[in-house]
Image (tube, rainbow, N blue to C red):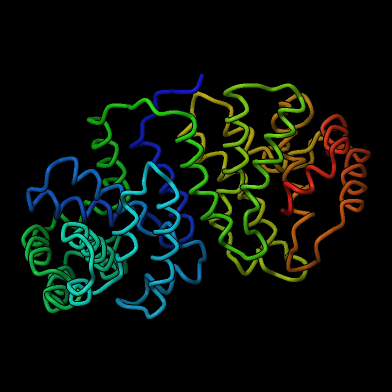
Length: 407
């Protein structure tokens, strides 16, 4: 089976929840930007496909942001000198993802002033879309301190005035005018409350037909988000991609075939998506973790499971990805599952994850040699944590797997 029906609206909306994790204390930023941008586009009578496209661009506009410190800089000031970095990264990620490549240019310029964009050699419509994302993004920054309480009803006139003062400088005048017209009612701002926001996004999705896409496209989407995760730290660069390759090869060696191989690869690519919630201060810490830091780290596999469950509700991908820290004797996390509850695919991804992590440099240690890694894995077999057959299969072709881990 090489194709399947996929609700692309649900996929993008759900995966934007993963990007929201980077905010930690300030979530749903991407969704609010998306809804604001779409509302302005509708008011300007853009065609419905354009309005839907800008909605998705809004949800994905910060795909270049992996680090919590960077997210805070972007959401605490109206303009930040370091903003362009995540625009460039996000554009690069999207350019490499064929289903979303058409959004890359507007993501590249979504923090560029209108007066600068007018001198930038890009398509006029793309220029306007990029600036609409910038406008919606900054509107959300201005409203964020007043969300979830009635204070926004007292503050929104000042926000409109502030935005109007930047017309022709930061933002295109026609976009500012449209925003000023639709934002001068309380309902516009009250719709940003989490419950209403999620409900409105679900309502939009009801009118969108599911589409038939191939498994290669699903892998491209998974690869996009694996890049965001791995960018949290220089020590995890390419980790998810390499875990996916190791897991796929192990599955081949076990005789697993066809679509199931692709599903294992997708689970490997996304196994750490919940780690977007974890601060880079913890990931890059050179010493041992405190109990609080360890608790924060331990929840990432549960977040992975819950996020993927919303996208892949008819497959085992969420289990295979979310169970990668479970052990055969039931002392892993987050479910403390044991032998009988762990499919061979779960066991494969668990071994692939540990193997690649040991082969990769970490802030608290250097890269481990192949001999050391094999000894470490076998010790984990003896302790009852890893599957002996999976480790034996890896050991048979250890050099091949080491190349996949560090090439």
